[in-house]
Length: 229
Image (cartoon, rainbow, N blue to C red; front, side):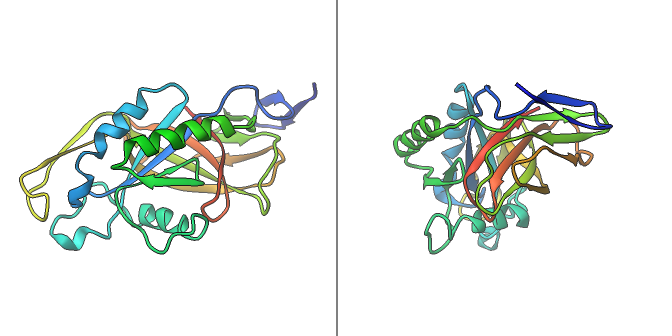
């Protein structure tokens, strides 16, 4: 088997897809001000305990007008959810929504349906391209089969600790919302077309965050690879 080398970066790895199994990526889009979202933290906690599953919580901001501003919501997370509308044939965004591997979706308050989608995604997994870190704060993606039109490479940083938020106004006033694996940073590193490429890794905005790199078909498409560092 051949090896590829990105000169000057200290990277050498096997050409072709990696043998390691990529995790199923589960994205929860939620809001602390959404009455039907309160129990979804339990779902993410359960999924996080499973092998080969990466569960992430994205706070969206479009329910803030109800009286409580979500403490972790960002417009970029709302934009990410909106990017899934066309590929998933949806008319509008909603919460609580779960998107699995970028191409399957269900309401998060239907855990049995979510469980089916996670198992389906695991069966569909092909060998992903390798993702690895390199010298000089860089991330490299190796050879692999790229989606039509190429793929986006995303860097996600999330807090692995349980978060308890006492909601003081709005529909959930007086409720403590518990969230897990809350995403704090989402950065597009660049494009990948199937050939080895490296990207600069930006500095973290906060300490204590875990990092994930996701390779995903452009404009909210299927996730083809993910790696946690």
